Image (cartoon, rainbow, N blue to C red):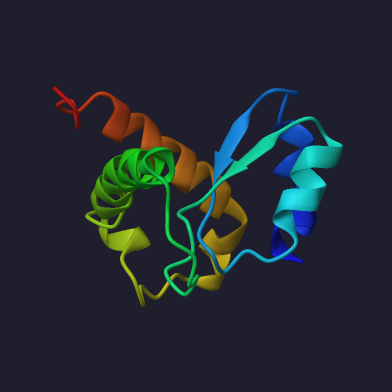
Length: 114
């Protein structure tokens, strides 16, 4: 699994909440074993009626996801990280550093949320 192989889970301290898309299967068990919580939107395929609290929580998660999508959009503004960008093989070893620097530059831009 990509998440396990990346070492991401090893960086999480107990009590962290992790937002993930529905596509990340079996992540909840791994996070719970480490004392973390998975946050993801409720399934739209579920036939059960949602309670008012579940609807409220779904809206809260959706509003947070908008901010995540905005950050991803800002990352993709950098040519080297655009979707389908071609990266010279000599730069592959620097890709983590490139992402780190781009995210740092994004952090000093205007706020996403007022």
